Length: 148
Image (cartoon, rainbow, N blue to C red):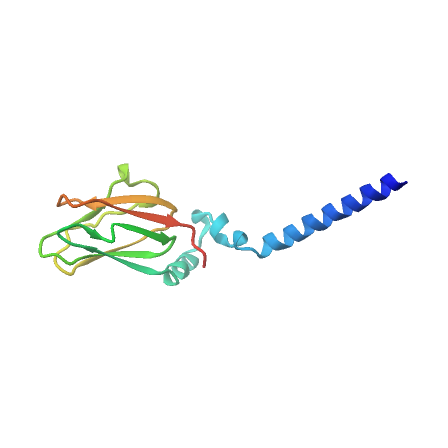
């Protein structure tokens, strides 16, 4: 009899633990669409909303290289490359065939002084980039899960 009470108590305690965990998980950041996001299912409206609420980051291109060289952003943040040099620069992805996080990352034309190229990164990952026209040090952008 004493054994049955002990088992019942442990079963009840386990059930309460599972219930508390389930409630916590439902209201935690892990249940936001950022963890379970399937980019193929985002509506255009939701995608635009995420982009509109994203942060904007600036990378300057100088004769010495990119400032900053390393940047961490969230999904749907906008990164703008601005040429602050008097010679032409063209930021492009180092990724083979522009796959993954770097998809679509290449300025369509060389940038003149004060001209900008912006890109919104939607996939998580790391994107290495360089200047297609000069031999400056390459840079790297890490795209993390969005938290908004």
